Amino acid sequence: QVQLVESVGGLVQAGGSLRLSCVASGNIFAINTMAWYRQAPGKQRELVAVITNGGSANYADSVKGRFTISRDNAKNLVSLQMNSLKPEDTGVYYCYADLRTSASTSYRPYWGQGTQVTVSS
Image (tube, one colour):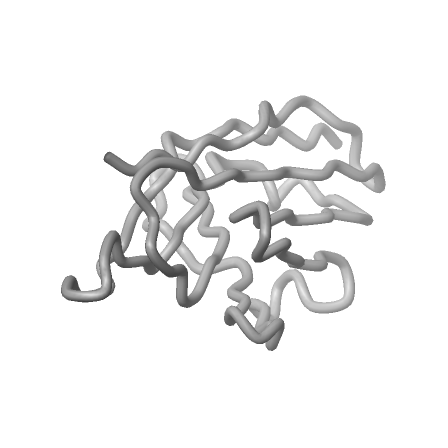
């Protein structure tokens, strides 16, 4: 069984910073990409940032230059450093991992339970 557990988000003022972390645990053989998604009230879930197991990262245009994704492959950990936060960054943030549980299984997506980030103006 695989679990992705995110750190607690929080409430922060506009212009502030927050760091999210997520650890994947359980029966994990290999992890491909890891990512952070977010969902604002009344909106669809959107990709915020993604990072390959080689460390190559990509970001949504709305967060470029403000957010940084990183990972520690040895710890199955992915983090999201969020700086210069804006009210429009408010939402539930979800950790994502594309992983497989054995050499004979295919990669499949796994999700964390989500953590609330609220940015006040």
